[in-house]
Amino acid sequence: MTEILRLDDLSKAYGAVTVADSQSWHLSAGEALGVIGPNGAGKTSMFNLVTGTVSPDSGRIFFGGQDVTSWPAPRRCRSGMARSFQVPQPFGGMTVFENAMVAATQGAGLSSRDAEALCLDILDRTGLLHRSNTLAKGLTLLERKRLELTRALCAKPKLLLLDEIAGGLTESECVSLIQTIKDIRETGVSIVWIEHVVHALLAVVDRLIVIDFGKKIADGTPHEIMNSREVREIYLGIEADA
Amino acid sequence: MDWVNAILQGTLLGGLYALFAAGLSLIFGVMRLVNIAHGDLIVLAAYLGLTASTALGLHPLVALVLVVPAMFAIGYVLQRGILNRTMGDDILPPLLVTFGLSIIIQNGLLTVYTADPQKLQAGNLETASLSAGGLTVGVLPLIVFITAVAIIGALQWMFYHTALGRAFRATSDRQDIAQLMGLNRAHVFGLAMGLSLAVTAVAGIFLGIRTSFDPAVGGSRLIFGFEAVIIGGLGNLWGTLAGGIVLGVSQALGGQIHPSLQILSGHIVFLVILAVRPRGLFPKMEG
Ligand SMILES: Nc1ncnc2c1ncn2[C@@H]1O[C@H](COP(=O)(O)OP(=O)(O)OP(=O)(O)O)[C@@H](O)[C@H]1O
Ligand SMILES: [Mg+2]
Image (cartoon, rainbow over all chains, first blue to last red; front, side):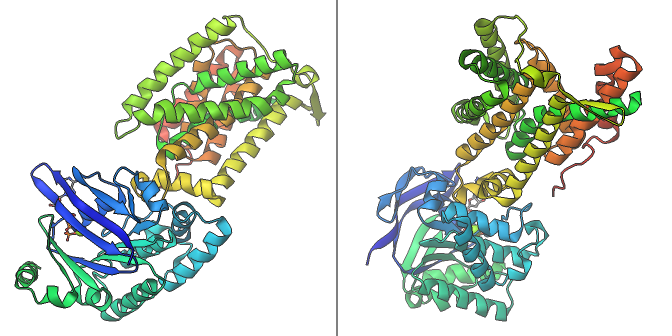
């Protein structure tokens, strides 16, 4: 299987806080990978490194076989990666539809006409179609989270990076989210999904990695990971905190 | 009748001020950049028009075909080559750099064109007028006004109905996120400055046809432009047109009271509006 993403000995620290500690792992094309780890472990920071918002102190990132470590963020996006944000970051002064259009025209590089068709389709799938003409700053938190997913999808990514999109959903909303992500997978998109709602993750991913203090401490099938003592300790810890 | 006439002339003059201001408003809206060299760039455009019309024998309005793209290119290169390097959380560096640029442009123009006042020769257009119901309006001021409305309408349309406009607004809204949607900030800012100076080119040519100019007149055009932008409300293009008209009418009415009051009354109205409505008459609805 061809490889879509590879992190090679990637490290990053903010002063005394290490957010990535010699992380090495890879993702095969079409694979869905779940990322778990306690709060502050460096999961979101890993996305910042992969998408190019933040530069690593050392190590390399390969995307689609190319070394993209020195590529600026827009170039990485246009070459096929898109992310959602844990804390939604919409273009508040633009409508939901316009938010989607920015991703479709700039990220995916579509003509306006093709972009419109794509956006309408995706807004329909993410359940935001009826909110198309609402300014993004007028959305509820849940709707903003859906807009995060919408916008990422409208960039037509080969690699979709999802950062905690299931938190706060009701059980039925979660079920439909899982179905949406499965559908996306069916189209051949590779996925890395950071999620605290582990049962949602387990319904979709083929593989899990665990990050703690910026270090990858486990990598394997969901079954292996969920039965590992180390992971259970970390997760019991989280549940006690929460 | 004199008063009605003053209001009419002031309104038309407001069109020119709106053209001075539209470019300022645009770059402030997109990238929160205050361009101190804006007035001097207007004058630079007038001189480019002068060179094009004397060297090639073109009518100044035809010279726009050359000057507009030239100013667009200057804007793009200026932004990518210099101004982008100064942009960040601190607004002081771009302010200082554009201030320095202002001095460089003035001295450059002085060296190349000398301090002699110049004018763009537009032939009959300069004196042609239309009369109706006891009022007379110059054809040129009318053309300037209509052009201002058309340009501001076109910019507004571009902002809300094109991919480029969405790129500007997205970048203005969340630079960091826009980058992750595939927008290259440096390029978007370059295009915004290019567009700003393309509008400035039109303003400069009209300025040069209307009045004589020399390398030092940029400063007062900058002030009129700023006043129009601020009266209208920052980052609101239709507001900028309204601001230009308010300024033009204030000056015309002041001039009607006494010719020496013309410029002063514009500044006074500006200060009063600033005191009463610090965010301008039509502040952009922003969250
Ligand atoms: N720009 C920054 N400067 C300094 N510290 C940072 C910065 N970004 C993140 N951190 C710190 O790095 C650590 C890792 O943060 P990160 O957001 O990656 O964690 P996370 O695994 O996504 O956590 P959560 O599950 O809470 O989302 C945190 O302690 C955070 O405070
Ligand atoms: Mg996080």
